[in-house]
Length: 389
Image 1 (tube, helix red, strand yellow):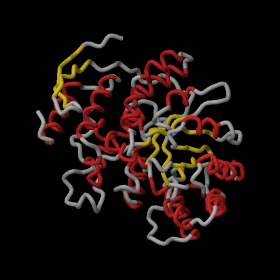
Image 2 (cartoon, helix red, strand yellow):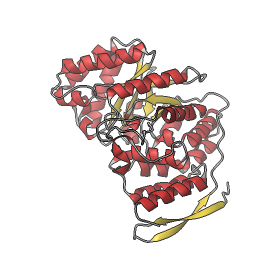
Image 3 (tube, helix red, strand yellow):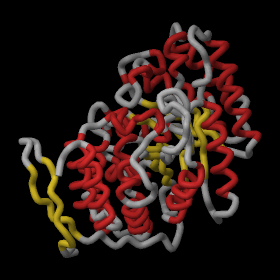
Image 4 (cartoon, helix red, strand yellow):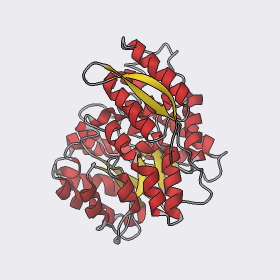
């Protein structure tokens, strides 16, 4: 599809010069007319309240109306919501009490949206230092119970505290066996790699991912009836495929690979991955369009819709990967879903200006700047703050 140039903006380049960038008209994406053949969840970000008097490094301040409006935007594209996860700055600005309030508000909003799917993160992030394995179990139990009381489904998040206190892989088995024996509905287990959170290095009791995989698989097989699926975020398609082929029957693989999601969702002769992705927050229209094409058997259209989103995602999730949330919120601001580029914990400062300039170029290449004049005006505001232009 030929896309006409709408306007031109000067952007800084690596050499310190300003270069013209021709911004093209956005791509046209269709909303889904029927169900997808893959379950697709977007890990959704939160919108900070920039007018709050709370100190941003110490207390989260949320614009609840804008935050819930963004979830309605994602639902409108046929995507489910993975709530209160790392994309929502869980553990890096968003505490457990605020997370629970977020979950409550999202579940309430979902009641008015036919077919809206929500699964919410339960973890141990309210624990203090020097927790024991028993403390970790109690913390998981408390968060799972709180979410279930709201009528919510659970994503069992990886625990930083468990990494610190576990003495062996058997301690991981003890914790997960106990929690899974009690949950009301099958859960999604989330294995978040150390590239997303360095404090999770060595999860499952082994720093080697393949060895850790076997420990995790043993937990899944033992608790098969209580596991809907496993989401792994290791940014390594070969590891995901290897684990996918070993999963117990009926247990889904949810890709968390923001580098290789297109081919993993398509799958191969031995199976495919469903999706639970932070990048879906930013590329919802393209992702929805692609998943509809895949549901219709049109793999060429599927890949055409996603091809230009992969470079965008790889840039947004580049090392240090844990700062990807900044790019997610930047995209939401460019596209008019929030009125400011301010984040919980002041995390808008986590990436440098040239990173944002390249993200702008890649978002334009993907046809995902929905209102180019607005996006350019906001990009110019950011440049001005940095003394450019």
